[in-house]
Image (cartoon, rainbow, N blue to C red; front, side):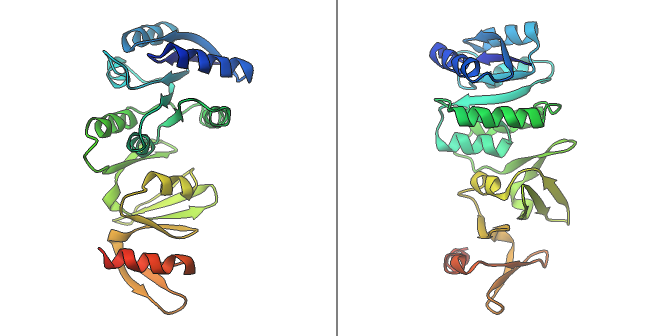
Amino acid sequence: MIGAVIIDDDPECVEDLIYLIKKHKYPLEVLATANSGAEGLAVILKHKPQLIFLDVVMPGMTGFEMLELLPQLDFHLIITTSMDKYAVQAIRFSALDFLLKPVKVAELTNAIERLKENEKQNTDRAQVNLLAQTMREPARPLKKIALVIKEGVQLVELENVIYFKSDGNYTTVFLTGGEEILVSKPIGNFEETVHGTSFYRVHNSYLINLDHVSKFIRSDGGYLILDDNTNVPVSRSKKDELLKLLSGI
């Protein structure tokens, strides 16, 4: 059984989440709840939960400010939010888990399954700091992405990512300088995360950074040559839109 704490300034949201946990018999025990950052800090230090459901936007002390006061983040964090699309994208960039309010059963189930798969991996403070920074400066373009790796979390400058390559439920991230990082996420997750940036899905297996395209070759059905000399195939259905994007760079 996983000991959990729910921190949200909306009591109704707290009750709704407790109801879902009990009704669907998730392997969670709600140890305590809190309706403010100050209360949340106290219950975390008292109960030492393995999991925290946290609304980061609260009056007085925000969720971020509360987390900064903790000596260590020795728990798994799931953010509960009703925030706008930009904020959701910022959460995805930080690779933190989240649930949109009102919480749906299927999404809660998926979050619990992810937690069980990565039970030994606690929240990394770098992820929280990245999210806090992007939330505080909403007009600033998102520049870094957090990659959850076996050893922890690696923060990467988005401009240094040349392309993402799919390998089933895994994705390899290819960086300038020749570094490759294997991440246990399907490429579709990254496509959603970097939506609206310089990345484009040219093929089922490839999500490329348009800023790192060197050439487009029309022969052999059409393919790209990237800055690291990688040849990337282009799906026929993507070719016209890709050429428009490249002409606008």
